[in-house]
Length: 261
Image (cartoon, helix red, strand yellow):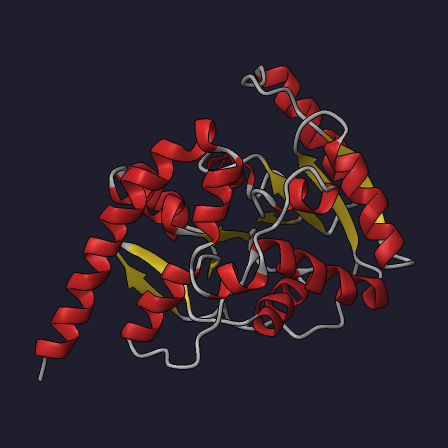
């Protein structure tokens, strides 16, 4: 598809514990994605970053390189918004993966952009397609598949790439979970002729499999506590180790700023 959106520079990134987080907004990210479609722009992928992904990268230089290779890395978690504000981005707000998906789908209807859903458990991407097309009549979803949880063989991977490219997708929404989806996007950028967006739990939220946190908990940076209560066996290690470590670093940032000239 030929895009009528002008190409634009990727949003500026601000370093947070060695990861460049984009100081951006929903409108700017959607505009950037639209500008990449059909105009010969270099292959691009977009990450939505939270404390989990930043702390994974903090201990893994290879994964840090994956996040830093993204054209855009949105502040998906409120604690990252706090860090950007500490670094001078006063008006920064959260750019949350599930809501980014909705904002872009709203734009995609008018532009005719073709969307592909890759990830989630069995039946989940098909349910997401059903929900999104009901919410946005005219939205073009040209494929929905749930890959096996295990690593794909080279032949299976090539077949998946061929299916996605053969669909004519402009955007591929990737819901494989962190850090798998980010690594997958970095490996497939260029092989897949579409913008790749890793939106993590957005598939499960939009399919109705996972309850979103109440708005007041999201605004207060307490979404992690809600999710921990919902899935303690899966998430306890992530939140009880990563979050205190991140907050310790955030406090250090605040103290350094206060002590600065």
